Amino acid sequence: MFGKKIEAAAVESVSQFVDDKKNASAEARRCTIVAKSSVFKGDIDVEGDIQIWGKVIGNIRVKEGAIRIMHAGRVEGELSAPEIIIDGDVEGTCCAATLDILEHGELRGISRCGSMSIKRGGLFFGQSEQVENKTASERVVPIKDTNNDKSKDKATVKTSA
Image (cartoon, rainbow, N blue to C red; front, side, top):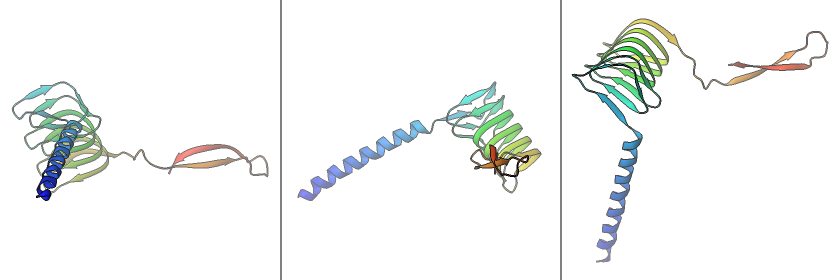
């Protein structure tokens, strides 16, 4: 008799918590979509993820999120994002921390990324430039005075390891 009332209150509070969490994650993961039959000419700057199903002629810049070129998608321009996933056609430059070319993906141009993977069936024609991670640790190396026999430190120079 008392157990049913407690269970009902617990279910209501859990469902309310789940709904609040869904709304928060939906706002945090905004996604822009370029539809399959559309053609977009111009530059795109977005905060969240973007999916390209149609054709984009221009540059795409994403601050926090991923650029996904879907199977039917085509982009001519420069792509810049933390993560780029290509399953369509891209002609231009890709700048990312991680770049993935999937089974139907094709990149013709320059790849500037920290890590790159190409699945079986994916194509890459162009130039690849590895970009060093920004989190590389720095070393402090002392510069010694060569005029005196004493090894005094005159200055320090920071170099990346």
